[in-house]
Length: 532
Ligand code: N01
Image (cartoon, rainbow, N blue to C red; front, side, top):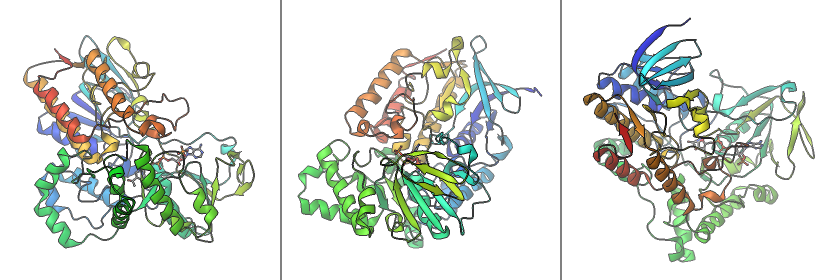
């Protein structure tokens, strides 16, 4: 089947980014179609339905700010929203703003090619359809391309296999089952305590322990929510200018300026509050290893307090990377889960997994039989979803070629040689280091203003300049080099994907500063872009 359609904009993805992008562009009277591979909207929150899936940003801040009516009418129920609640929220947004009529579900974009002469994209989907569009917006998410390692013999395993990032909609019943979980990042750390409550036996295979802090999740106090709603404009404005897209600032003092007692009191207080704010307790935690070590030692002491067996506690302590250089995990009863008689921990650094067979998996030292194996092994982050489709720009250059040594963007929004293509929360933008919803809103608004600028002036084409991209890439790398980020084998650096170029992908200079740069570029007639 080949239907030739033509629209103004193709948006790829119907998560937080795609939904808002659609709403904004429709308000500008552009004809927009959104392609979404899932059979529902929600993006990350559509796919990540594993038990315990919950956001680590508080509900009232992990929400759109563009509609005061939406802000007032939606009632969050818990301090940290669970996946079903966020998915309900996004479905409500889709209905409330009448978005569904422009969203085509179960449709994956497989190809996009720029026609240099016509200044137009030809987008192809897995339904065999081709559609012409003046602009393409990639709203494909930073963590949407799940990774399952390729262990020998996996296809011979007779039990069930799941990945946390593409969890079955009907759920999984672990009752009475022998379960293995591979991976102890944010997803594993959230899923493990929940699976442990159901499974007969749970074995966790850990390669690198995470630094995890308690969420202290609880029902939202209605009085607190009332106060938030009364002050939303100020709260949002603060977040828009802050380093993290959240309505608070980190500590301004350095950890080295504080005494041991002061540091302990600060860490205790933030540990008691719950959530990842402890990672920003002092201004120098992400730049000074000695300072960072004080927080690492504090978290190690908390692991000792929580875990009964000293050998297990020791295995759970991260020793080879600074706190926050891999994303801090936020959990509910993670460490205490190892005190349960049905849970055990295997260190696969000491005894690597050698492969699967029909009954389970083997490490160098032992064999394990399972009914279910859960891969909590993460994502090909930030670039995976962008390099999935075959994208070719002006002069037939492919995006895979342009990014062969790592992603290159101007402002994380645009890449040289790919005119009229924009990325929401792309590599080179603050995205995953901030409150994603704040980052997404800023990008969507910048892109829609940019398209309005082009349309108002009858311009056909917007393309980033090489020198602007080179300068931005150098700036993003330079900022990362001034921090401890490059010292960890994190997905921020692509280190979790064998063969992926090792480049620190997000912009670490702070969300507020980044917004100012983007605003200044726009005010300067879109400096660094050629508009024609
Ligand atoms: O993925 P990860 P994730 N053998 O890459 C291990 C967001 N998120 O899905 O560190 C054995 O962090 C791997 O080990 P190592 C959040 O931004 C947010 O958990 O590579 N183990 C690691 O332990 C987060 O950072 C929320 O040595 C293997 C784990 O699998 C991001 O998503 C909740 C392996 C993967 O951890 C990704 O989190 C969930 C192998 N071959 C996710 N390959 C919240 O909002 C990989 N591993 C709370």
